[in-house]
Length: 263
Image (cartoon, rainbow, N blue to C red; front, side, top):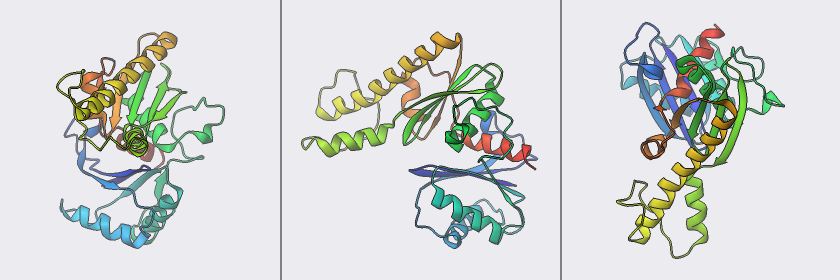
């Protein structure tokens, strides 16, 4: 089985794929299970192995004998180094890491391709595999990433905006009279309390940003596919009129494809 690991600045997502299974659809096809953890740069490679081992035990997968591959993308260099060490020490396979020199099958048309985050490349590869192009991937993470793929499968570029949670953290840190709220859609766009007003501004405000950015991309590209992923995609997608598909496991699917291309 393939262990796919997506390390973000805030959260880390692990996915376990069975190459012989086609259960599920889209990015979830063949996905045995997945886990979302807080990203902790203090974890050593040995601690990571214990954690991964215990997670795999919950689905009856043996860490030492059942894993036939590992694919990693990481925006946190320190954690990437520890994950490399973990795979090298405990697994009989070498990790495939999305980084310069790895075959991705996707031309990167950035001025400096090395600047593109590994997760953005994985998302773009997965989205093009599932939906073709032109496509815009909206990834709701620490930052809101917009990744644009051409009809020919090229990574054209995109945009990066502050993410929902860090924007709220900044607001609450600067406004003494405001407090943390549950991130859910309010009863009405016109908030009748401070809590609902924050929820309205967050949910509908970010949805409006997504729709506005997608409209600008469409003005350049014409008809486009719009795919959402990331931890808060489920919150914004229902109220953003431009989002057509939600793929929670898009990055993991991209890792699976890159692993196949580098075996």
